[in-house]
Length: 159
Figure 1 (cartoon, rainbow, N blue to C red):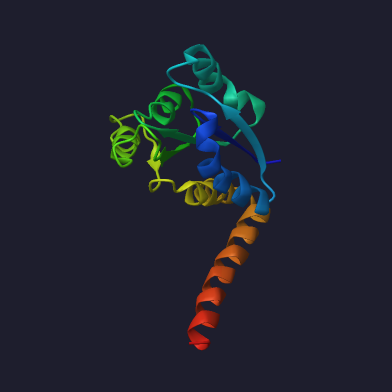
Figure 2 (figure 1 turned 30 degrees about the horizontal axis):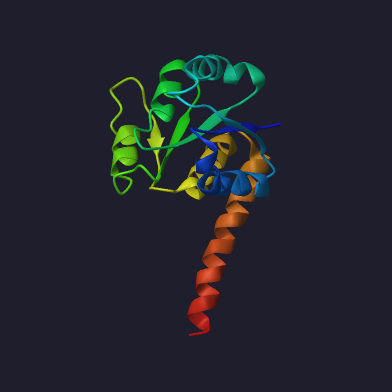
């Protein structure tokens, strides 16, 4: 079974990260959810980053606000693709600090970065990564995108 790790810096990130969890479940992808703070639980971060792939996780979606070091630090430790979700938090500078902390990674330590609070797109991207080698997931993504197309066509027809 395909498995995605969804991690966040604190419980306050869960309302945003729930979108990734929900969309992954619609594709029948198993989701492991955890709180892994880069600043408050660095030992847990190191363990998670180094060992997630040994538990069958194929992609990690990491959300964080403020300084947002979680996605980049996990990427520095893990051989897996990491998708960063910048979260606009209460201590954020309109979210730009989070966006730039995740987006501006040095060469050799990539983090795919979605829009501010864009956890749904992070979940879809994780599913697409898995779908590149899993035909069942790929078919669900194709059907999902057809549904998006049809919704637009139906809306346009009803104008």
